[in-house]
Amino acid sequence: MHTMTNRFTEALHRIDSDRDVQPMVDLTGDDAELIKLDEHHETTGKDGAKTFWEDYRNVFGELETTFTNSIVGERSAALEWTSEGTLRNGKQFRYRGVTVIEGDDEALTGVRTYYDSAAFLQESAGAARS
Image 1 (cartoon, one colour):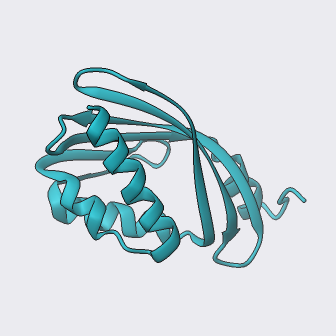
Image 2 (cartoon, rainbow, N blue to C red; image 1 turned 30 degrees about the vertical axis):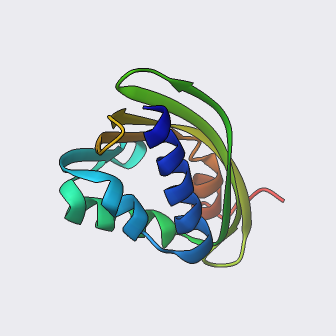
């Protein structure tokens, strides 16, 4: 799972910098489940992964993710991260979360992401942080 963890973080950096979701889609198994738990958003397979990651990236203007810690097991890994940049409307943001990936070094079978949505809730309520 160490190899997949490295491949996943590299693919996520490509999404951040180039908006290119294909490397992440290529990592995704045909029956993989991708879940963003705070919004009850769930997709499956490669087509679902394409939608999942495009939807994720389209929220932001500029985006940079820094992985701060990881716990890697035989068939899963938990990756802690901080992301910062701008939302599509230009407002700056910074938030933290954890992404749990499952699978092996060949393909992802699951992705679950948990994050602090306060930056987005405050933005939608008109009370964005400075």
